[in-house]
Every structure is written in structure tokens, then in C-alpha cells.
Length: 565
Image (cartoon, rainbow, N blue to C red; front, side, top):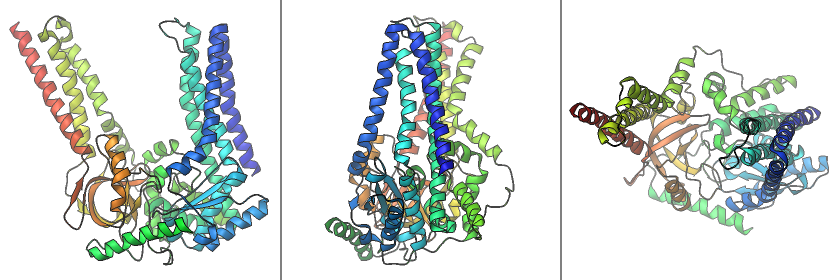
């Protein structure tokens, strides 16, 4: 605890030291009137930060379908664990809630330990055994005991203040800002971005300490490691997995059971896993009296951990995440297990058999192909002397250079689409098989067909969560529902997504990982033959193709006009 406090004070001191240095320089360089504006900007940022702290718990309760019930009503072991820690720390028990969703997760929120709320999902209760549930709840209690709500709010206010300093002192045409002011504005904007990553680093540090707290309180680091494998990788095959060929009566019975449990419970952002990561995994909302899913084996877990530990994209993904990668958390828990005389449940995979940097740099190049195309197009326009022939009053002078730039840029976008969405045969796959793949990213994918049952939302309890979670007999994975317009995704989440829960499907799409495993949907086929299609890839494909053709056509036509002039 002392080590955590020291690290937190050091990080907070660094963040607020940056604010003090840049704020003082901004006040000095801006003069009296400019200094007043900077002061107003800082005041606005502090007020906004305070309002976020004040309103966030209310907003979380409003946008999530949380049923507030006594913990004993859900699980006596969870209730006992909460009571033990609160008696030990002489603090008020957090309000307990459950979200009736198959996605296994847990989180806490509030203003301070005395006003905390602790929420679990039905999937967590179903997927984890008693030891694992206790470990997860202890992790959440660690966040409460460590005052993480307050610490992270104080830290998160810093980027906002730096951005407001930038906004209020950046040079404008009407104020003709001087060189020092422009420099300070630029530095403030740079540190606005830097401070965000420092805040994320602090969040990851506190996650490690919440893990340590759970391990020390339970005396069983392996229990949390087993829970993280299930939650983080989805490697927990449900014994009652329903085949796609299930009869309509059984399908409807499962959906009715899901609705009835929500009704029964109704009558009577500090989570175990980052929703952006953990949304990939879920468990069917089957009866809570069934046996917990079997703990995944060491071999399957080692395969799943390889991406976290070997793929260069893992580092890029983690620095933008509030939670450490599950592979690293499991490795840290393994060291804790050894320190208390236990044999770690999971060890790190062997040394990588090859380097994955070739694939990484290829992915980076492909990702920026449109920008590369833009630069090549501009360079070609100048190199061919086309730009020098531009006559502002004639179409022939403008058509060729514009066509060249548009055509080459669109060609880059078209090639990126071809790489990101390979249209090879969508082979039958299993979740466990896909999660073990290393050579994948958000750019590089594997065409796949999965058969299973839709058993939850991507973000459990969120009213408009459009992503759906598929269960097969090897694990669970999110199906990323994408449409060309975000509005269409939101409407699907609000009005249609719940209809799919409990229904067997055949899903085709592209398996990706960054860092969570997910299937970017192309089509979902229901047993009655109904097909639901995502059009994101098609719009990207045909739009880039059309602009490529039009751009080069304009380029050729413009050259013809110039030669005939």
C-alpha cells in the first residue's frame, strides 16, 4: 500500500508539476489580459473536472441496466467476501448490483470508499467458480480501499487543464500572438497528449496493485489468474453450449429464461477488465445453478498469451489502454504465486519462434497507404510539370493535377481495403483456435466462420451497445457490428441487438486483435435463413474503387485537354 501511495504521489506530482510550469509560463507570457483569460480557462477545466467527478456515478447508473440487490441474493460467497473486507477496514459496505448479461465482468464506481458501488454481471457469476469469484471481488474491493476513484479523477483533470491553456493562449489572427505565446501553446498541446498517456499509465499501475491486493487477501494468486484467463481470453467452454441446429422451442425457452431472471431480480468504470478489452469475451446467461466453466488448460492459455507477449502491436495497444494486457497480469500473478510457495497455474509461453516485426511494419505501411498515395500524387503532379501548367481560368489546367492526386490517394485506400478484408474462403473456425493466433492485428485479419449462440452484449448492461457476443463450444468472442454510419450502429444497439440474445447463428467475418480478440462481422445467418449484413467493408471497397477510377480518368482527360490546347 505504501509503495502504491508513493508511486501515485510521484505520478500526480509529475502531472501537476507540468501544469504548474506551463501555467506559470502562460500567465507570464500572456500579460495581464491574457493571463486573466488563462486563469479563466484553468478555472473552467477545474469546474468541468469536478462536475465529471460529481456526475459520473449518476451517469453510470443511468446508462447501464443495473439491478441493485443484496449480494446474498446473487452469491453468498461474494457477500461474505465484501463483508470481511469492510469489517477489516472498518468501512461501509458498497452498494451491490448485478447486470443480467452473459459478458463476464465486474466494476466499481463512486465518490469515495464510503459511497462505493460494486457491480458484477451474470456471466461472471456463471463462468467463475467460488475461488475465482472471490478473487475478482477482492480485486474490485482493492480499487475501493485504494481510493482509486479520487486518485484517477485528480489525475484525469490535468489533460483537461493543459488543453484549456492551449485553447485560451494559442495565437489567433485577431490577437497576433507573439512567439513566446505560440511556443507555450504548442508545448501545452504536446503535453496535453503526453499527460493522457501518463494518466493511462497510472491507471495500469493501480490495476496491478488491485491484482496484488486480491492475491494477498485471498492467499491464492492462481484464482485471479484463472479468472483473468476466462474473462480476458474467453477460454471457458460452457458445458451446455447449444448447437446451431437447435430447435426453435429450445431457443425461445432460453430467451424466456433470460427475460424471467431479469424480472425476478428487478422484483426482489474501475473494472476487472477494460470494457474495450473485455468486451470480447462473455458467457451465456444460462441458469446460475449450473457448474462453472472448467478452468482453461495451460497449453491453450499459453497460446492465447503469445499475442500479448510477442506481437509488437501489443505494446502499441497497451499504452492506449487503462488496463494492462491480460498476459502481463497473469505473468505478474505467477510471480506472486511463487512468492507464497505456490506453483503458478500458468507460465509464460516459450521464446518466440520467429520475429513478428516484418508483419508489424507491413501493417503500418498498409495502414498509411492513403497518406502515401496522397504524397505520391502531389509529388507526381509536380514532377510531371502538371502543376506548372495550371491555368486558374481553365478546366484543362486543374483537371490533371487534381485527378492525379485523387486517383493515387484513392488507390492507396483501395489497396488497404484489399489487405484488411481478404475475400478468401471463410473457413470454419473455433474461438480457441483464433485466440491462439499471433499474426493478426487491427489491420491484418483471418477470414473466419463461427457457429454458436449469441449470449450477450459487447458492453454488458449498456443500453446502446451494438456489439454481440458469440459462444461456441470452445470459448466466447465479440462480434464487432460495424456500419458506414455510427448512427446506424447506435440504432441497432438500441432497438435490435437484444432480439439476437439466445439465438443460434452462423457468423462470417474477419478475426482481428487490438488487443482484444474480436470478429469484425460481415454476415450473421439465423437458422430460418435470414441474413443480416454489415456494409462497412463494401462501402469502403466500392468508394475507394470509384474514386480511383474517377481520379485516373480525370488525370488522363486533363492531359488530353492540355495537349489539345
